[in-house]
Length: 211
Image (tube, rainbow, N blue to C red; front, side, top):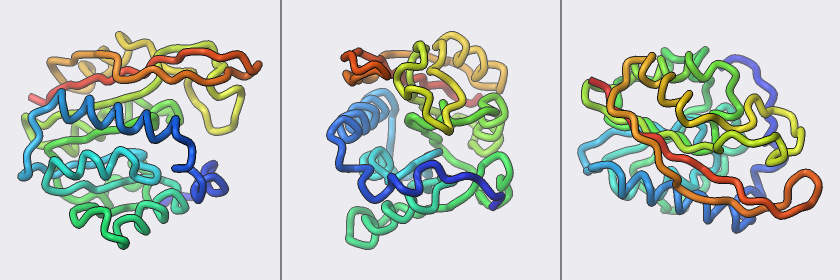
């Protein structure tokens, strides 16, 4: 894998201890399960899976999930959960999907991602890889922040986008070859902004299909 700065290296061990993150994962996973016709024959990929909060919930509804992330420390937390019996159908791969595409073998029925795209500069390229790695008729499900003023992360390193305009994500998906893109609100995060004021930030889920 290409060398990357792991912004989550020192956060991984305690990542799941924040209730807000667990609530978000539950909401996003629930929206994916409710919004897609999942079944046990499906092979799925979770892009930017982190510690697997969403991965493990979706894994209950499909045949297998490959969790991909560039943070070895975050993946280590997911590996520990799997080793402890959290799932028997989850594997992990430490890779940059834009650089290490050849390491991701086979095609997938479902590719999903939660709160990862705002860390990525080349979103259009990522969506093209998703399309290339997906079986005909496969589905993509993307959850991330709606466009905001940058106060959600407060200038932290490793943030490429202050959320997204849903319509622009839909356009990028269509440009990448996906069809039937639909957007909905999956969750609302209430948290202090960079000035300490409580704010509500909405998270979308966009589902689309490969022809």
